[in-house]
Every structure is written in structure tokens, then in C-alpha cells.
Image 1 (cartoon, rainbow, N blue to C red):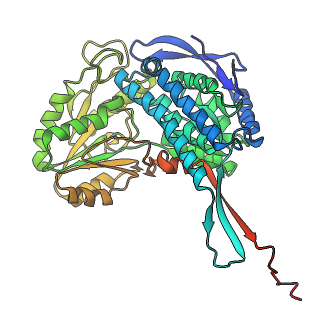
Image 2 (tube, rainbow, N blue to C red; image 1 turned 60 degrees about the horizontal axis):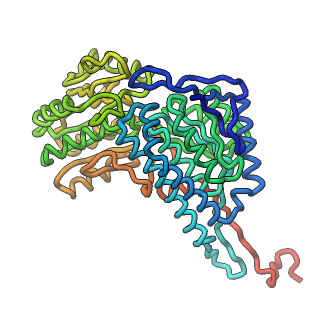
Image 3 (cartoon, rainbow, N blue to C red; image 1 turned 45 degrees about the horizontal axis):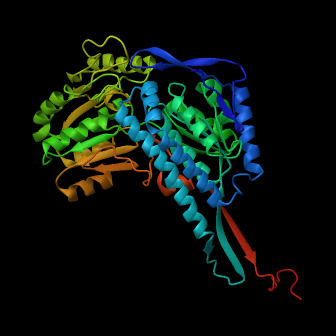
Length: 492
């Protein structure tokens, strides 16, 4: 299988003719050759998107026609859900049921933003009372223009759709560059969009590495907005490149999310949500609650139960029945996580379970569910994002102490609190410095609710109405009553 780029309504080979391997992380075997784009291809894609935006073939098309096309995309995804999910599992390593969940969410996302676009059209412009009857002032919302979307490998199709669907719904044109580690499902998205009949140039797909394909997109003078999800260091580079052209930018970056658990919790519920908060999607989740704070009276018993249940998690290839933890995405990520684990040992953290390869699994990028306890608060593994199946646990004695520990860090994407005392949950939630707060759960994500973080976790919001408005500009239109006379200079 050899993929192609999708530029200006056609599937084409990259200008260089080069490709790179798609590797199954469960077997370490190459299963496809992915087209490797460079600056030449990026320029062609951006120019196609620019033409498609400027001539109005999409932005000026009746909204009902645009949203009908988006609903055809949603239907196309659903029609191939099993097939795309299987490909996602092969490319990324996640368990197949999780991949199926992701693909269904991606389809829903297109429907949701089609509905929002229809509703926005029905509302029309917003009138503004300026206090002078001679003026009629209105706010109009228009598409921002050409959007470059650069997306990660942990939810390859879903996080691409988080950007593509609202951008298209708003009337923008798009150039998508998925991660080189997991591009295959986005190639299928291009096929579905092509079949749905969107005009040429409205959606374009560039596959390739960040330096060769991504950087030229963020630096291109004809791009109006850059939407990026990924690491903090890369996010800084994206922001610097966008700043050179005063381009709009939205960033969803890293996280090291805390989970505060009080002693009045049901221990089984606490165990379930802790495990889901870190081992779902192999811990390759920006919002993973990887710092768990447990009130001291519950601490020993909960640690014991966590160890027991973590060691019961079924590990293996994502398409095997019953598997709840697949391999991490690539050797580079495996090596990075193993480096964290080696340094954690010297930090003084106490390893409860895991810490390396599962017994007997010598092929594939597998890492056993890992728990560290009594972790020094200045340790790298407590403060920095591991992005793997690794959780750190510490005790606390008072509510103010828990809040201070939770907020002590450079990230602020998400946080969670668990207690049977709902008033206490609300009180703590109000003091946690993060863009997403979960009460008595961890990681539920809904297309209808805004997603994004404080501090180093990013700028702007995706999903919900905020995710739609992120791809629209505000325009003030003020009209003077032509029957009136202004009379400032010509008052006679």
C-alpha cells in the first residue's frame, strides 16, 4: 500500500517521489509507504486552498449546501467505520474498541458542526445598540480564511476532525498535515471528502515530517490561521512562525493533569477512574490524569488495589479480543518513556508495579502499566508529561494542600476531583487552574463542550461553539442613515 497526497481535488504523488514507512507498533513491521511531502507540495496545497477560498466556491456557497456536504462526509465515515478503526489500530496500536469509539466520534463531529453552521446562518448578523438612532451597527461573522491544521498521532483521525470539521463548517479552506507516525486514517478521510463532492482545493492533505512538510505550512504567507495540537516545544515554534505573519493561532499542547481523591470515595469507583484516566489509549492522552493525589487515610488501601488491578489489565495487539492496553505508538516514543522510567528510579520514587516491558513480550513497543508512589514533588516524572502508561501517586492531608499540589506545575489542560461530598468537589473545582475539570470521573470528552487549557497547555479552545467560532472573524458593519445630515464641517 502506497499513499498519495490530496491537493486541489486530486490524489497526487509528492514532488520528490519519496515516502516513509508506516509501522505496526504491535509487530514492528512496515505495512504501508506514506507519501513524503516537502515545501513544494506544501506550497501547492496552500495555493490551492487560497484560490478555493478567494473565489468563494466554498465560503460563498449557500450554507445549506455546505452543511449537506459535511453530513455526507459523516455518513461516509460511518459507512467505513470498522475498516477505518482497524486501520487506526494497526497504525497507532490502540485497542480496537477504542479506535471504533474514536471513529464514531469523528463522524458525529461533522454532523455537529453542520448543525452549528445551520443555526448560525439562521441567526444572521447580531445587532448592536450604539445609542444613536442615526446608525445601524451590526456584527457579522465570516470565515477566517485558509487554515493549516497540524495534528498529533494519539487520536489520528479524531483530532484531525476536531479542526477540519469546524473549519469547513465556518466556510474556511483547509490544509491538513497529520503526524508522520500515524497518517493512514487521514488518508482515508481525504478519500471520503473527495467522494462527498467538496469543491477542489477546499480540503487538502499533506503527509510528511514536521520539518519538511509542517514548517512550510506554518510559515506560508498565504495562510490565515494555524491550528496545532502537539508538544509544547513544537507549539512554541509554531507560534513563532505564525507571529512573523501576524497569523491567528490556536494551540492544544501538553498536560500533566492532577486527580485529587478524597478519603470518602468508594474505593472501587476511585480505582476504575484512576485506571481509565491514565491507561486508556495507552496513556497517550494530553489530558491524562497522570498525577494522582490521595487523601492519606485512603492512601495505603487504594495503592494496594491500584497495583492489583493494573496487573490484571490485558496487554497485547489492539485487534486481539479483550485487550485493554496496546503498544505505544512507535520506537521513538517507547525509548522516550523508558528513559523517563530509568530516571524515575534514581529520583527516589517508589515503583509499585510495571516499569518496563511486560514479561514475555519481546516484539512490539509494549510497556507494562506502571505506578510510582511517594514521588518527590520536584522529580521529572512528577512534573513532566510522559505520554505513556505511567502514573505517579502521592498522599495529601488537607484540602488546601491538595489544591496547592495540583496547581503546582507548568500545565493546565485538565484536572479531576473525586469525593462523595459534592459541595467539596465544586469548591475544589473552582480553585483548580485548568481548562477542563472533571468531577467524580476522568477523561470524558464531548464534542459539545469546549476543550483547551491554561498556562503551557495552550491557547484557544476546540470543540463546542467555541471550536466553531475559532474559525470565524468578527466584522463590524455600521451604516449611517443617508436621510440624515452629519453636519460637522458642512453645517450650512
